[in-house]
Length: 134
Image: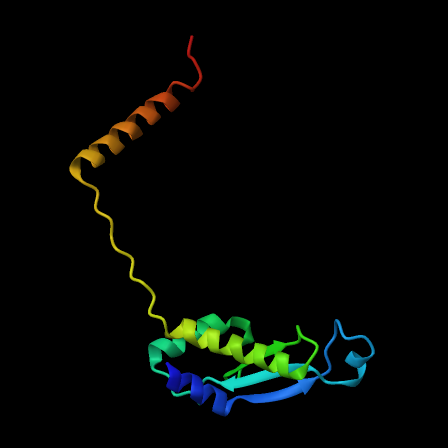
């Protein structure tokens, strides 16, 4: 996992853009927002992790295969840079985790009988709600 994150930090491209939001006059002068781009093809991920990362990225994934993360919540470039890198790392860590397989449930004979008896009773109850023929 550490190797993949290190690789992501190596190939990540950062660009700083003017942010909206808090910051007063400073927000108009300083480009504090960070746009982080990481190309998922350059990460060299195994196919299963690659497909999970594509699903997790969703609409943040460009046609060229770049995951684009905009960070503009903080007033400083450094805080926004840290935020963007943390979000990218969290996304990759989530993709690396193997999803738990669903265990099939087995209904024993007694519970199956109870369930069918309950369905039968419900059906009879509903059948009595119909129109009455005189």
